Length: 71
Ligand code: SF4
Image (spheres, rainbow, N blue to C red):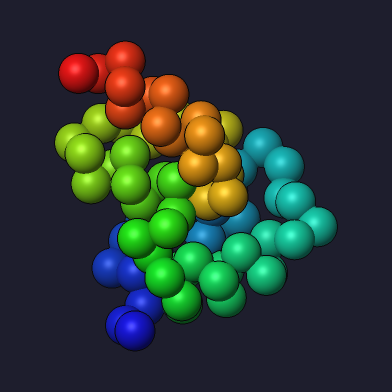
C-alpha cells in the first residue's frame, strides 16, 4: 500500500502533537506507511472535517464520534 499522502503535513507523523505516545513509531508503520484507511486522523480528514490537534491515529472511536456529530 502506498504511504499516506498526508505525511508531509500531518501533525502526528511529524511529531508536532502535544505529546508523542510510546507507540508512535508503531502507529506510523501501521497507519501512515500501512493502512491509512484505518487511521482516525485520515478518516476524519477524508470526511471533510478539520482534524482535532489531539486526535491520534488509533482513536477510531473518537473519530466515529466526531463524524457522527457532523451528520
Ligand atoms: S495515516 Fe493518519 S497519522 Fe499517518 S500521515 Fe496519514 S493522516 Fe497522518
